[in-house]
Length: 192
Image 1: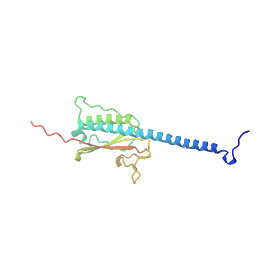
Image 2: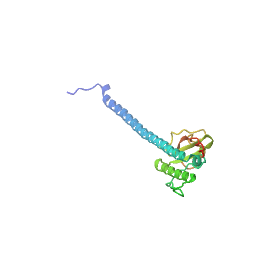
Image 3: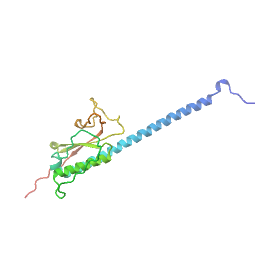
Image 4: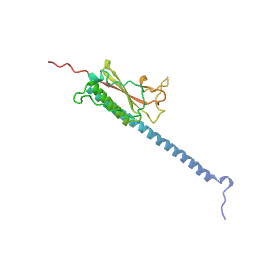
């Protein structure tokens, strides 16, 4: 003879199993969302590290050519952001054994823009010299996988990018990272 459960007890175990399965499903969804965000933020962190290295690279190049190059505005890149579609060209000095400050700045910027192109998605840069304060302002820009996490100003512009660097209509707004590079004072004149 088979024992029977009272009518109010029937199905209680089935409901408990269904609730447990629902809790486990929500937990799994939360873990998937957590993993997705971790990957996204890891990529953003990687891009920020690469941008820092590239800004330091340009800073070192400008310090070699400080007086007649960086402080004379020969490294300035003052155009609006555009996502590069082709590899920036290499430019060599007209006379390889006697590179002028202008030739050196053009060569350095070409190499830097190539590094931006190959290292960051949509990588581009904005460079503005400040000879009064013996400094150079550098913005490194790229297309971030997290389009929504950037701080937006009152006029809808992204706060990280300079106003002159904001893209034209139809181009996604990049993430910008700002660096201010100080240049050493000029060396004293040599005595005859």
